Every structure is written in C-alpha cells, then in structure tokens.
Image (cartoon, rainbow, N blue to C red; front, side, top):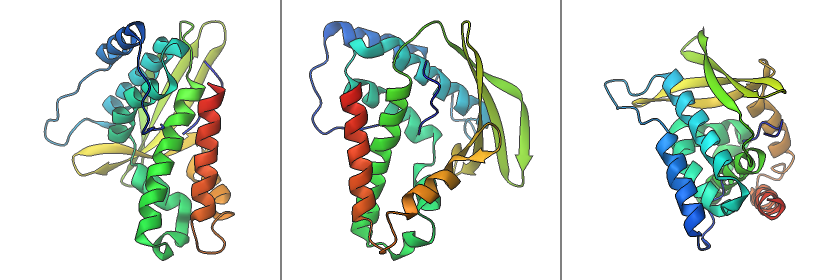
Amino acid sequence: MHGRQPHLVRNSRCPRVSRRAALALTSAALLIPRFARAAGGPDPKDQITRFNAALLGIMKAGKGTSFTARCDALGPVVDQVFDLAQILKMSVGSYWRGLPKTQQSTLARVFRDFVLASYVSAFDEYNGETARVLPDVRSVGVLQVISSAFTSPGDGSAITAYVMAETGDLWRVQDILLEGTISRVAMQRSDFQSSLATGDATRLIEKLRSKTVSLDQQA
C-alpha cells in the first residue's frame, strides 16, 4: 500500500474486463459489508468500515484488473460515504456561487473522476494490509470525527481521521484530517483557487482532467 492519502474516474469508455478480473471484482464486492438503512441510516463508523472494505477490495483486485474497472467498483461506495458535492463547494470556496451552472455540473463530474482515480492509483496492490475503525469518536458541534487505521505488515499503521456530517439519512465524509489536524479541504482550496482567480472554472476543469488521465496512465 502506498503512503499517499488521496482523494474515480468514471471513464465513458469502459474496456473489456477479463474473466479473471471480473471474478476478482466480484469477490471484492462480497467483502464489502452491506448495512441496513434503519432509521437514521448507517452510523459514521459503519460508513468508514464500508469504505475500508472497498479499498481492500480494489487492492486485492490489483493491477490485473483494469484501472477503469477498479474505479467503477469503488465509485458507488465513495458516492455513499463521501459528500463529494459539499467537499467540492468547500474546496472552491466563495467562487462557487459565481460559476455558471454548466461549469458547476462539469466540475462536479471531473472532481468525482479525480477522487476515484486518486484512490485507485494509491491503493493498487495488496500485501496483507488490514483496516479497522478506532473506537473513539470525537464530536465537534454537529460533526463527528472518526479515525481509522490501515496497517501494513512490517510497516506500521497509518491513521486517517474523517470529519463526518449527517446529510439526509446518512453520515458522510466532508473532510479528511491528515496527521489528525491538517484539513485536506483547506489544502485543496488553496490549490483550486489558484485556478479560479478569473472567476471561470475552465482552467481548474482541465487541470483535474489532466491529473486524472495521468493517474490512469501511470497505473
């Protein structure tokens, strides 16, 4: 497992998936816990448990499975666990309201592609890693902070803290704290806003598309 903590690409051209790859993805899907949507929906810990299982699934599918197929496998879980719309709005900041609706829509699509590509690129092989949600939950107003440990044999554990908010009937991730304190959204906002100074999202859209293609080609 790589040490990077990223943010999939839903490619319109989906290549053929070999029988072996299809079986790998099917097996991976069976490892993802399915939580009943009782009143209030899955609690925050269940959501992160589900996401961890999905990451382990694409790691086990590995590079023998196409990049696009791994993106497609992870996509539905990311959509359920992450509030991508809110993350994008917070990352764009005050520029969001001034963007034309067509650019907002396009930016949402390419941002999702970039998030998925980043995770599939970073979690691309399995070497006995395990994942667990830590028991302590920290409340910050209406938000909950859930920590998760990814452990690599002989390489220790990497702790990731997920800041979650209740949206509708689900708890969803709205930020990730690196090293427990560094906001990914804040870092991303600094990066994104350098491409939005003119009040137009064209440059940022192309930048995210380029990064997504690069991640795909490196896989």
